[in-house]
Amino acid sequence: MTRIVLLHATPVAMAPIDAAFRDIWPEAETINLLDDGLSVDRAREETLSPALIDRFVRLGEYGYEMQAGGILVTCSAFGPAIDRLAETLPVPVLKPNEAMFHEAVQQGNTIGMLATFGPSIQTMTDEFNQYVAEHHSAATLTTVLVEEAIDLLKKGDVEGHNQRVAAQAKELAHCDVIMLAHFSTSRAADSVRQQVAIPVLTAPHAAVKRMKASVAAADRHSPAGVKE
Image 1 (tube, rainbow, N blue to C red):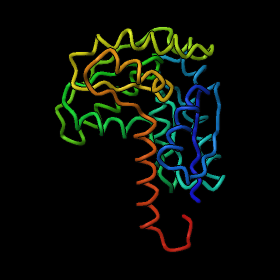
Image 2: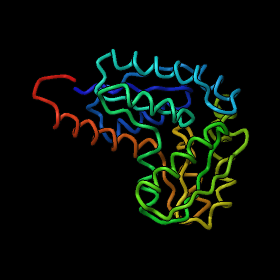
Image 3: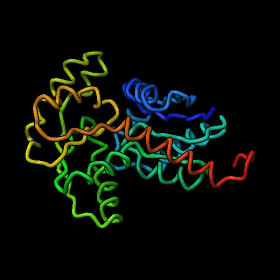
């Protein structure tokens, strides 16, 4: 059984990724590591500080010490920290949205994104631009921030969150595809699809498929019976 450690900076990301693993890779053993102070402190910083990067990396290293076969990060506001963690560990370390970016650019060049956590937008935009540059794509990204939606979700008002996200989806109806930026936002997928006639992508299922493939590839390149 492969153990996948999930790094969370907010509890609202946990249910969507759990559902995605049940749908796609139920054989995997998932372990949740949550530091919800990460998202609180990240919201207070204009840019990701070295201290917060170090703190995030320490959490990831602790996850690896739990015999992780892979680490999947569920919060999109820590891109540089995830990069450093990936450089440090010998197992697959995946950002939450890279698999969704791949699916999006397969469907067109005008990509829209609905986000609910403002501090994540710059890091996600940087990651998207890096992805399209590396893959020689002409895709461009337009992002809409849905104010206060994540606050409703944290209070347990899932329906209010979904309605608020869906209400702004029409601002991106001109795009070829819409991405829901965060794992937590994936709850609104059905509501958003009722408002637009274009594909709507969510991060959790794409991430699980990518992680499963990454672990399988790592296993093929490792000596039999030897854990890196």
